Length: 227
Image 1 (cartoon, rainbow, N blue to C red):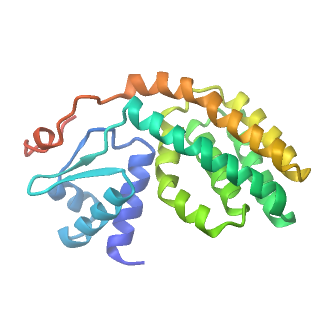
Image 2 (cartoon, rainbow, N blue to C red):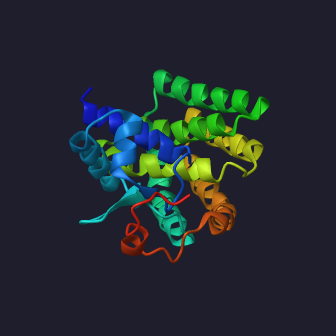
């Protein structure tokens, strides 16, 4: 793995896990020292993160963690409702024993995380469930369309980790049962309802995290990282 990829993975984890908060200024000098990399691979890492929507680059000024607004959440749910319902329908038609086992493993990790009240692990397991759902759909184009959303989805689950994890676990179990039964219509219905049910709760949480009026140019004007 290249130095740029290592820096990318470490920064991505910190953004997704909310160690670096929405709207936070990213100072190249500070990050290069923290990650023990030079600025050239760091800049490449920031470009990769910007392509995933996790970082905003301001030419000639620097970068900041992408703001998290209700509009961002609304847009993500609009896309998810369509694509994840399709993924569930295809998964019910095409899932094999290995794919079903991977879904069960995600649900088991989520249940174990719920039992120990590990919010970060709950978010990761739930994000993995949705990733596996797309993987077992067997549609390469759908996987390509969803891949850029993986990091945003994981970040959403982490930022909204105060949502009822038991309810989400139950909904995943219902969706799994429909897929395992080979019922495409029921699987699509459960997927659509599951995504739609999380919309209002996520929007409510997003308002608390929201950085609505941030001006990226102004935010990157200071030479110091905002705290």
